[in-house]
Image 1: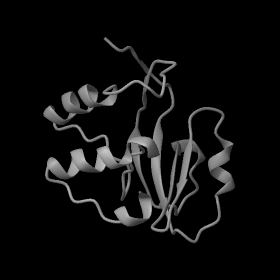
Image 2: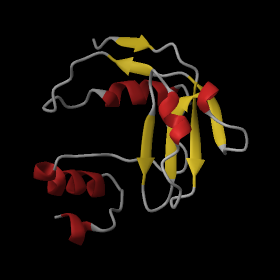
Image 3: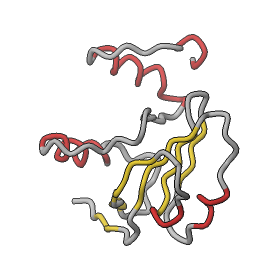
Length: 128
């Protein structure tokens, strides 16, 4: 069974406009933080204490770390954890959008499996 560790920081998820510059205040964290910039949004996960007034955010979150190191060849690490939390109706989602990364070498198979499971996958022509 995989071990988890509870990180000490109280975190929040901030949502900024996609055209925003990377916020310097997010880099003030000495612990956990994550910044994701896409065409749709700039999402910042950081300690609540770093967030200036007026920034759109959702909190208070706590972070569970899946103990590693985890090799890229491992599969199914997150699935049982996500399944248990989903059964308990506990969201593990971020702000507006969630992302799933798969290796290019298995992309075609990943899309096939997802479509067989009832999901539609847009933009396939660009990715293959």
